[in-house]
Amino acid sequence: MSEDFDPDFSPFAVAGTAADAERARKAGRAVGADGTEGTVAASQLRGFVDRIEQLEAQKQEIADLIKDVFGEAKATGFDAKALRKVIALRKKDEDERAYERETLDLYLAALGMMG
Image (tube, rainbow, N blue to C red):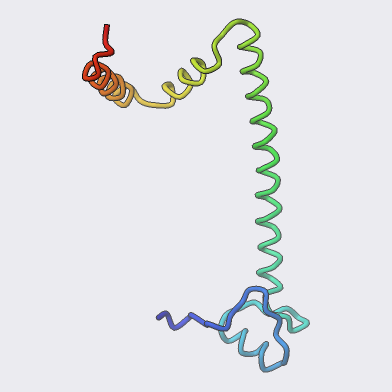
């Protein structure tokens, strides 16, 4: 077990006494000026949560924009399912695409589904 491990540590703990605060300082944990343990960690955690929430909102906005583009393509007469497949294939390198085509052809031939 690591010597830095403290089974009693909680990032949400509050040091109840000066002795608790001193023990937390010695263990390398953040202790605020008011003696509360975890103040810095809570602030840092809040910052991470805020950033993730902002990114999640941006991700949803982008997903909505992509959905709109697929809708436009469909309204123009393109098949959205085929368009998604083309996009997925473009993300792969040529060797990976070739392997997938060969494997699919092999399986279709084995099932008697090739022309």
